[in-house]
View 1 (spheres, one colour):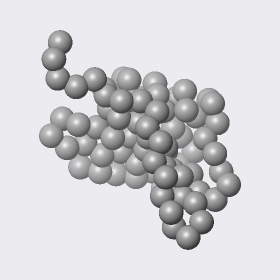
View 2: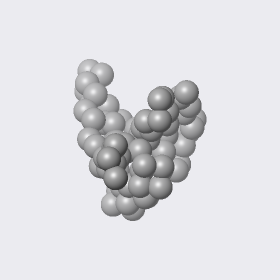
View 3: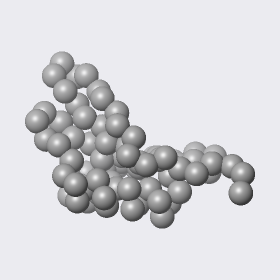
View 4: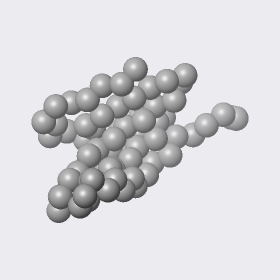
Length: 77
């Protein structure tokens, strides 16, 4: 399952879940950058969902750069 929040002003623009794994994404384009407050909120969401949280930056000519800001705890105890 995947969904996006159109014209989002929240911490998560896109979320996806499959087989117990969760991915939360904040998308930025052009010169826009995630603020410290946005990153803190995204990490908080990642921790509460035990999911990976990433910021995706679209740069010139469609180049996509992904930055993981929180990694889910997997397996074990």
